[in-house]
Image (cartoon, rainbow, N blue to C red; front, side):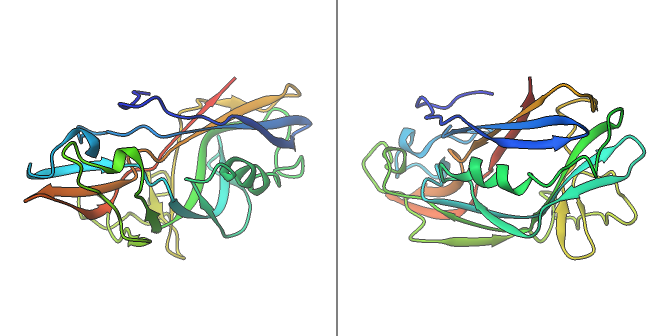
Length: 236
């Protein structure tokens, strides 16, 4: 993962254990702030007189809501745990909160020998961000960039302004939209996992360092919209 202009701060902790097919699902977390993604500069590197778009951390709040966290088995069926819960990815407690959320995956849901092919979290299309008052929220000519409080955005369409495919007709789409309006992500970055008696450790890495976009020009730096929430998973 490419790091931004400033060294990200990380907090890593053990988030608890879950019995999965007789083994332990152990989850750890890394939290960081990486400013500058997808070719967009960090706001502290551009002048307010330059017309353009820059990014800065959603350092106060980046809220997202999960309905369930699902595991897709090789036969296409889903094993899901959790109930609708809102998380703040900008909070250092997000790890413990996520650990509690997925702690319902017991041996009643998975058995030794089962094959997991994808992680399928179900995410609300509504996000709330709040960013400002940080060193990365000031342009190179000392103009402050701030969201001015909470800003809520609803993802009505995909990045190409097309409707999301239905999970009923396109269950493997990434994402697809459930019947109740959530987006079911399909993440295969962990590869194929065969459930065994051995402990399985999954790391979640949250990064809100480019969570807000701002428009510069004319000596101003004004809120434009929500930026990406980077969530990556890896396993030991």
